[in-house]
Structures are given as C-alpha cells and as structure tokens.
View 1: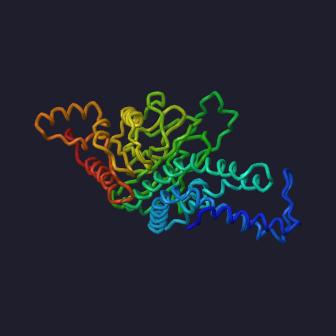
View 2: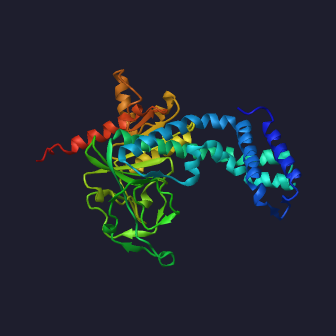
Length: 389
C-alpha cells in the first residue's frame, strides 16, 4: 500500500535521475533519451504512475477489484469450457478488467511528461491526472459488468460450441444515402475458437451477434449481442421465421442492453439488424453495474425499451446493487399493474412478479438462474403440440 505523498517521493527519484544524467534532454519540444538510460528512466517513470494511482485513486481500485477478480475467473472458466484460444474485447476494457492499476495509470503518460518539461506544476498535474480516470471509470466498470453477465450465462447454459459471423465488406462512399442490399445468406455462422465481443466501427454492413453458442443444457443455439451500432446495408432475405421491427418503431438502444436470440438453427439468428429493421429478441437483459441506478428516468427508459422491443420472454434487469421495493413497483407494465390491483384485493400481491424482472445478482452467478429457467421453459413450451394440432 502506498504511503502518503509516496508518488512525490517517486517523482523526486526520477527528477534526481534526470539531473544525474545530463545526456537526457527533456525540453518543451524535444526529448532525447539515450538507449543506455532508457530502461531505468521508464522504470522510475512507471513507478510514479503506479504510486499516484494507488495513492490518489485507491477508492476506484477497491471498487474495481471484485469485478476484475470475478471477470478473470469466469473468463478462464469459459475458455476451458469451450476450449477457446481467447476471449476478445476492446483493448482498453481488457486492460481495465485484467489490470485496473495499469489501465488507470496509462492516462498519466502525457501529463507526467508535461510536468517534467515544466509545462505544468504539481497541482495541475494532480488535477489533470485525476479527472480522466474518474470520468471514465463508470463506463469501463459498467462495460465490464455487462461482459461478466454474458460470460456467466455462457457458463450456466453449458455451452459446448461457439460460432462467429463475418459480414460482407462494403464501399463506404457507395452506400452513403442509399440502401445497398446484400443476401443474408452471406452471414454463415462458423465454428470458432475465439469468442469476440464486437468492438467494431460505428457503421457496419449488418449488425450480427457478438457470438453464437450451442447450449447442452437447453439443446438450442443462442445468439448474444451487446452495444448495437448502425448498419448501412439492407438484407434482401431476412429470416422468415423471425419477427422484425422497423428501427423507427423502437426506442433507442443503449450499451447496457444484451439482446438474446434462441433457435434450433444458428443461421436463423445470424442477423440482429440491418439498415431498416431489427429482429425481435427472445429475451433482453439490462445490466446495471453502477450503484443507485434506479432513478425515475432510467426506469422509464427500461419500460419504454421493453414495450417497443417486446422480448418474447421478457426483460431481466440484472443489478449488482440491492434494489428498493419501489423500483419493482415503478417498473411494472400497465398490464402487470392491472393484475397487481386484482391481487391486492385478494392480499396476494408480490411486486417482484412482473413482465420486467429485477434480479439482484451482485457477483453470484446462481442468481442468474431465473434467466436460464425462462429460456428452458420457452424451449419446453415450443416442443409442446399446439391446441390446433
């Protein structure tokens, strides 16, 4: 654990080192670092960044530690389960989850050189170096929790195969302002030893699943998609088996959401959205890693998205934090509220039973079982003969 002002002491060591080695030149517009001193310089340089983070951002490190530990654990379990070569996320998120200290310290590189150059003083360095880590921490923590939930479901579903889907390339200049059509048949799921959370540019040909898995437990294929961007092409032959919505008819999608699709044929769920439409999900997960997320505005947004996407098996809000009873009441749809009024008359109401389900999960994977049970129930009901048969 760092001692008070330990980063100042580390900075003095670096300053003294630079003074003792006049061959090092650190000027306003020029840096000269001979190879003979480079290694030791950067050891001292990096020690300052680490000491600063451990001293000044200890609260963030303590908050991130359980997430990092649990994510690394489930990542290893899924890699073993599917015999994967890797699980890939955006590099900055990967660093945050695997080495939070290093991830937070990296943003100090430029400010620390500005301090050495005399462009800023100690107080300005601290102010600048604290702002970005604190501003970005919530985003990376939330993104990490979303990934943890997804991998935990892969484990609970007892996946035995994983698939990736490539998308056809497009001429960016050609598609501006016009709807270029591609055959959806080009989206063929291929078995893969890499599980990739898409970290693609904002515009792509089609929106496809991050990955598809086969579940031994449910004996179905599941497509999982997070962080939906914008598609530029139109699929000429979207699955006739699935239901599709116009993008204009649904509420805006947020990174908190995970869309889940289930089918006995992976090709039927190889397309999530194109330029004009989105496939109706079987189930939606809203991941809430931040504390106190249940403000009125957030609850109303969840209800709006649920009511426009109409996921077949409902929306599940996965919360790291304990949720007050009032939030359960506020998330009820009108239909659920009407049922509740009838139940209240019979004094049998339970506000935790609604179209939108809240799961207080924390980091306990077993608390995600209601989602798996809902998927299993849907599969069992799907195999039952209809009343008309």
